[in-house]
Image (cartoon, rainbow, N blue to C red; front, side):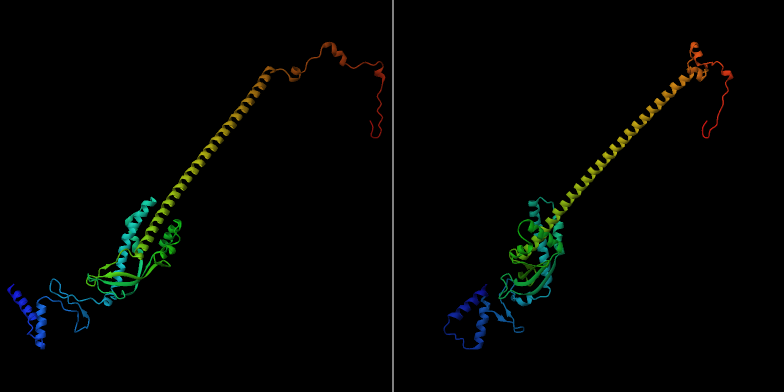
Length: 339
């Protein structure tokens, strides 16, 4: 404490004394050292070896922090991989959030963890990494960078999302994305000059707000998941309806077969009954004939059936006697073809 008091008094005397002249280089150096001791800030200088700007702000540990070179930070070859991972993780979380909201409004049951894994199917291309023009390191040491980013999705995902937007009356997917300054190139959602911040020390990446590309990609995945579940539920309903129709058709066929079988049984019973009646009638007829034969047994049929003429009529059947007939000769004269 005494040393600091003496030093400050010396500095005070140094400034107040009009008799002291800074006429030599030695005194100038001494003054600079003295000012440094009293806690004055130095101005930005250049590193004598690299020629780069150096910030000589003193931190709590007494070490000087060097300003990062924004072009080197943003142009790092490993930054593309880090950005891709950041985008996938961000899309995974946002997709689950959007899908949960849509599922509730659509009365659809979703497995959100499964929905989140859809982000793993994204193919990300990062190009033209560079620092944001005119950007300087932020007060927290992070650097602002930008890149062209293309996030390619599976074709069926884009198709389902497009159907959802059309069914909802919002137009096709390309029009919806254009309203958010995101382009649809085939199955890829693209954005030029995608801005983000990176920490030169930890390589951590952050974005400000909710970038349109991330929101659009997450929304497309969420809409696709909803459409997929709706289609699955509809397919299940159709399958259930088909099974029901098949069961009903099988029941009808069984009923028809049973009815036909019963009809055949009735017809067979009727034929059997008719045949039995015919046989019974025939047997009755044969029985009557047998009884008639028994009544006439032992009596010749001609006598039994031919009535005997009365005796008084028997003379009528005798030939008439002609007198002198015994003396009549019958002469047969043959004529050709005539007897």
